[in-house]
Image (cartoon, rainbow, N blue to C red; front, side):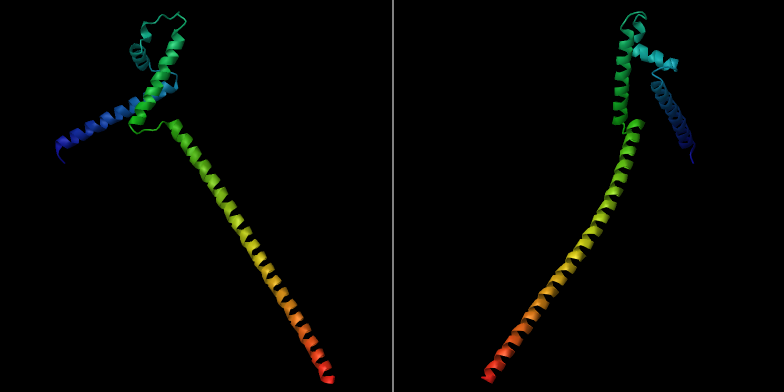
Length: 161
């Protein structure tokens, strides 16, 4: 391998590691209500004009809150633009996915059960249909027999006359 590639790739990995560390720091800083990382807090105050406010005025807390909310919204928008989903949103989606998956399994089980019931009902109704058909055939057979007997009697009476 050539020396330039190794130097380039080495520096790339070092910068990536520093960038990862900075992302982890800003994430921790935001989760700690913008406290704990003095350098980041000072930079935040400077860019949002909070370093020029008087400590004893009524609005610093409101201004700080508004600035931090705006920062968080902008940070989330930036991450979305970069194709990154915030962890809380990802966890919400995972939970929804798991809930829907469980609901789907329950519904599939219900559908399976309902299909079995339908098949049973179908079999019962077919059995009743066959039974009804058999009863009709029996009645017709009995009526035919009665008719034949009546004709036989009538024929005998006519023969005897």
